[in-house]
Image (cartoon, rainbow, N blue to C red; front, side, top):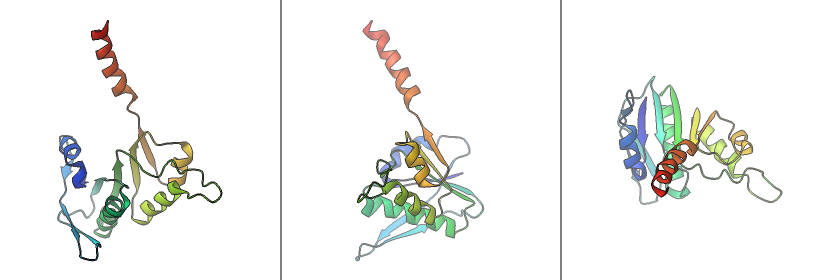
Length: 158
């Protein structure tokens, strides 16, 4: 699998890169005077699985960069595009209540339209949000990590 990470996640990407079998992909983002973003993939991705470490907020920068990156990977014939979102924005807008936006469904539609095959995130807000995305979702729980750290600290507090 090839990892493509937005610059904001360079530290996390460096840690993920230590996973055996995960290679680092290269791409560039260019912003034109009109503020449009262009993504250029600098790694051959045809037939390969790609992992995009991205974000949907702030939307004027990261959402567009993430979606354009995913779309470009699919255009360049990546076998699969999996997004990894440490925080998956818009998931609290999961009900689509009368006169309110349905942000979870909207974000899911954008991800699907951009060629995303699967979403990995931390503690998705609800089953409604998961359903609204209409893509396979892996929701990781930090509970085990927190429990281990709390247990370590508890020993010192006793």
